Each structure stands twice: as structure tokens, then as C-alpha cells.
Length: 210
Image 1 (cartoon, rainbow, N blue to C red):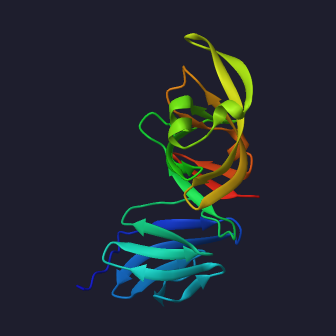
Image 2 (image 1 turned 60 degrees about the vertical axis):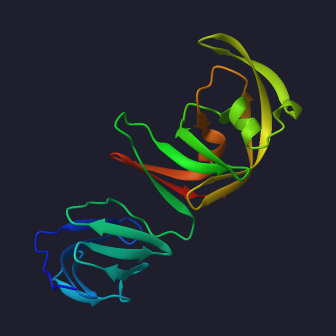
């Protein structure tokens, strides 16, 4: 690999749990030059622990990769990530789209599910067509009705065996299947309440709580 010193690279990982800051100011083959908590620059080799819970695991000409308690964090040239907290729980980082919405690709009962994060939805809400595709026998659930833009729609409250987003897998999650008027799956509070949610600009980090 061609040797390169990326002096213009200044990427910070702010670590609330340890009150530590890591800045990447240079990259070499197998090594990175880091500034920890504003101290003098120091060269670390791949495999070195740079601070509590944080290990340098890979470098290339443009990127340093850290392991934060089992979770990989890549920092590219010019990238900036705030408040990456080492955690023993499963975490996932979501990126907002151009409209500020968080769309996630996950699984419900093992079936692929594209979901919109919606803190205003009490339960994970699923269109009937998606429920059928995922093998959910929703008509055995508790029936009810909701008002939609197209009028009243029948719904069924169900218990979902599993909901997976990234590395987070939750079992026995309350859900709602709606027969019409719902264009996509809503990842509601019956899932989100069991995670710690942290919003930082156009990123949201979910950490499993139970």
C-alpha cells in the first residue's frame, strides 16, 4: 500500500461514557496517528486499544476502523461522528433520507421488511399485504377499527414473534395489521420503547435495552 499521511483528516469520535475524544490526523500502512482527549499525537498499530472499550482494528489510505465493544465504526476522510458510546448491547445507526425520514431494512418474523421509524405510532403497524407475505395470520388477532384518510379501516392487533433491525432482535413485539390505507410498515413505539434512542443531526442510534 502506498504510504500516505492524511494531515487534513480530522475525524472525531466523542465518547460520552468515558468522556474521551479521539481525532484521526494521519494514516499509514497498519497504523493511525490519533489525538486522545487533546493530548499530543500518538501512533497506534492495528490491534491496539486506544482508550477504554475502543480498539483500532483496520486502516487503509482513507479510513480508520474502530471496534467499540464489538461494534465496528468506520471513519472516512472528512467524516465526523458524534457520541459513539461503547455498549454491550446491540446497536444500529440509522441515516435520515433527504426528507428527514429514517427508513430501515429489517425483518419481521423472518420476512424482509422495509420500515419507517415513527415515534407517533403506538405499535409496529403493518399493511395486510405485507402481513400475508410474512406469514402472519393476522385475522386471529384482536379486531378493531381506525380512521384513515380513506375512511374507517379494519385492524387486528397481533403479537409478532420477532422484529429485527440491524443487530437488534426483539421478540414478542405488539403489532397492528391494517387492511387498507397504510402504504408502508411503521416501526412504532412497541419496538422503539425497548431501545435507547439517540438523535444526532441526520443520524439516529438505537441501542437494545431489553
